[in-house]
Figure (tube, rainbow, N blue to C red):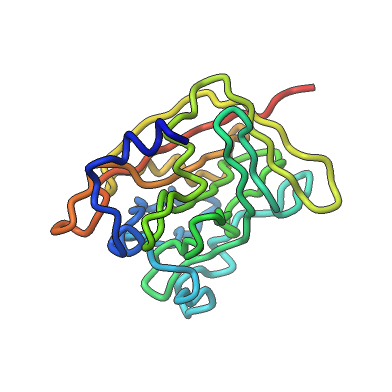
Length: 217
């Protein structure tokens, strides 16, 4: 990932990158119930209080899809060398989306659709780097381009295959609510942090969003 390293040259890679990786806007309310509120979602998953009262209620979880989808176990994008384990995450006690502290691991938002479902946006998030300065697997998203194939593997089932259709960079407090939609055509949404990195303002100031659509067979 030499190109990724060059793009990160000049950025201060420090613990603050883990403290303020992602900021999510509130997901749209659907099915008559309010979604959880999302703030700065860089808190390591080890500190998450996923069962905290009021953080995510049963009513705020999506209704069961017509075709049950198994939780994702791994995501691969061969064109950029991305190969990350995936584990489910929820929200912290503050209402922020939890992110695995290990930058080699991606988090799947378990209160949203799973990859392979019939509708909605399946969200996977990951750190671009760690407090040691090592790049995370999702740093490879900087090199992804429309048309790149994406594979999500699930235990005991066939992989789900996607093709990248779009990528964008938005301010960290302006993630579109559609990223967490629970209805409409199925998509895979991959999110990580993006430059600029401003230590005095809490770290990375933007989010990189990669969208992929399922391949039809």
